Length: 139
Image (cartoon, rainbow, N blue to C red; front, side, top):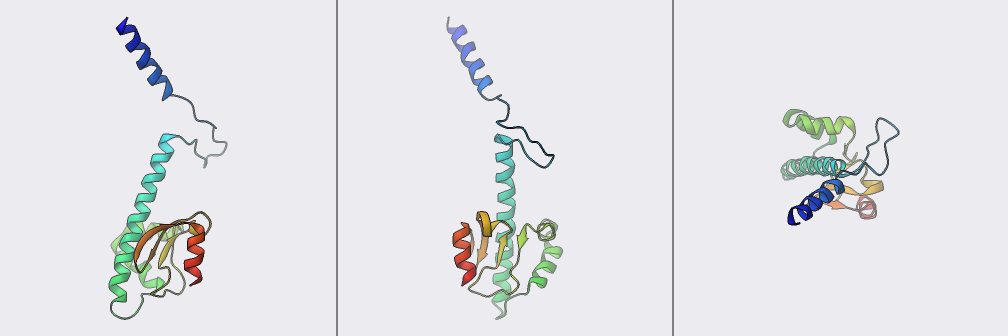
């Protein structure tokens, strides 16, 4: 009896994790969702956060000399130091404001103005909502 109950429990656990996606993608660029997609999203977010953190540290070093770096110099730094960061700039995932100021936003994800996400300001990298970003960019 105990073996039957254990077998039934294992079967229920296995079948609970094997459900098909809620909706199937209709286009090649859509994802089905589920656990794997959530893991990919978290990894992508961690990579972007790390790149923003590294850019923040570089900008802090540069601005300590008394002058803010230009977007062009930051792109050149990315090309020289990190191929992944340079790729994120080329793909438009990371955005640099045209004019950088000490009190403004230094770098942000492309979707931050609409969905929120990671930004870098003088105090450091942080995750903000779209509303918080609009307030920060307005200053």
